[in-house]
Figure 1 (cartoon, one colour):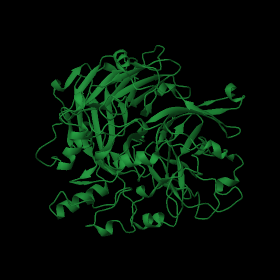
Figure 2 (figure 1 turned 45 degrees about the vertical axis):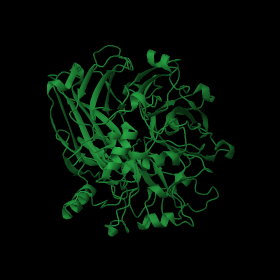
Figure 3 (figure 1 turned 45 degrees about the horizontal axis):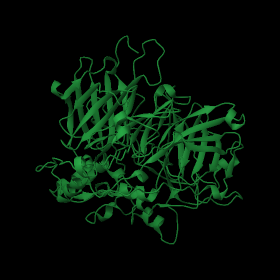
Figure 4 (figure 1 turned 180 degrees about the vertical axis):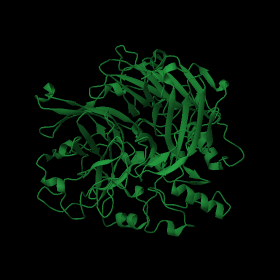
Amino acid sequence: SIFGARIETSMTSTATARLGVRPRFRDAPSVRSVREHRTALAVPRRSTAVRAKSASGEHAVDVPLPTSGALAPPPWVRDAVAQWPWRGGLEPCGEHAVTRLSQEHVTGVVPNDLVGSLYRVGPGRIRVGSTKYKHWFDGDGAVFKVQFNEDGTVDAGTKFVRTKRLETQELAERQQNNQDVGIAVRGAWTQASADFPLANFGKFPTNPSNTSPMFHAGKLMALCEGGAPVEIDEDTLATKGLVNFESKNKSETMPMGFSAHAKKDADGVLYTWGLASPPAIGMAVGKISESGKVLKVVDLPLCAASEQGGAVDYEFTMIHDCAMSEKHLVFIVPPWRLKPGFDMKLVKALAGAESFGHAFAWDAGKGAWLVVLRKDDLSVVVTREIKNMSTYHFAGAYDVLGDESNGGNDSVRVLVNELNGERHDLEKRFGDMYLSEWAPDGYNTLCEYVVDLKTGSLVRDAPLVPRAETPGSESRKNAAVAGQLPMEFPIVAPASFGRAPRFVYTLCFAGSGGGYFDAIQKLDVGAETHQVRFLQPGVFPSEVEFVPKRKSGGDEKEDSGYLLYLEYDSSEHKSAVVVLDAQDVAGPELCRVKLPYHVPYSFHGTYKHAEREGVK
């Protein structure tokens, strides 16, 4: 999940066993660990466009922020939002119990086969009083729900995930009778304020539970790489507590972290990864049954070690997402690392003297690290250093047996985002969203990588669809663009799993002048033009959720379904849930649910159909 994912990311060590010990995967005969030629590592980034310093014309919207009460922002927030109205969507909205909305809030008709609930998870706040968290991904998690009922009515609400860190923060505020006490707990990027000196020393960063929702083993969970999943009541959004998956084999311990993008297979088996539980060092991958039992846990090989058998370097890196095909899990780990050195950043981060997240740096001399695992036994198929690139999200992967375009060798094809610009520039934006300014270099190009499963080579990498120029008036009039726009959060229909998808839905930056996400695109692979839904000035969309239509017994098309998304209208400082026909992204809305409040920008979502007798 950025935006991933938020997007929160996982801090992991590239050592796969104990410090200085050769990783166990080195003895596996199935591994093919080969370095690409160094000249392949340097990848030219797209040039950074000249950025406007503020919204102007029809995009210069007057945002009606609260002027009194607990949600009234400090002056610096008002100044930031006046400069770029999209920033109003970063503001907290408080908590709203799940309640029935009056009919005046619903326009259009809720499709009969859309009875169920959309859940979204993201940072419910990224400031505490006048003190900002030092990264978007450190914000306190919140869950939003909209429920479409069989009688056409709609319920909605949002609540914070009641983590230990949130309760600690609130306790500090009560003890000092002040909502502006500073930060009381340590986050991955945010150190506790000076008034809480012991909150940093020797403490591991706390888990904000702010990235994505997932149903598994009968539980709705809020996920984030910072720790264990948190169970949420799917009806009321109340926090129920941590979810701990247990293994019968005591030698197999689940990772301390839990991926925000855990992959659920068609048979109900769940694959996750995270920071290995101490005293182990490294990253572990877990396989969990449909009922929630741990089936297997293995080390994830995240470095080449020394090809002559030397010791493993001790360093931290980040993994947010992976791609899953019918037979494989594919990880691509960018060289965004925290390494030991004379600057002592790693030591200071471990001791609590400095933050982990802001100690990371881009390693231009190394490529991304590719790992392919077999799903059936989690054995290693390929490890390889590839080109220098950065990514947060994938659209998926599929296997090709006897791939004719690959000389007859089996391959796995991976749909992965490639960042257009530089990673440190992206992280700088995330580090202070209230002051961030966006241009195409902060977004991605969706690419297709072809990995030869016999040789381990990356035999091809290219944009899935050619890049588009900034849309002009004619493109906006026709609601179509020749190529893909700068994008994030790629989504495909579940029906495309196991094969090449024809359609990919993305959240886009069309350069309208609003300074942030302003369009939704439907990429039609192989076509010359692609549908685009351009939003009105001052309106900013979230990641879309594809919801398949209920099966009617006919030959269902890949894009037979609905697109649901939250949009923030800065002119009202409120949000709405929009329902589109996935076959006609630029067409009329099927339904709109106008909320009586705004929902802060969220990262990822999931949809659950309501159980209805006689309906599949």
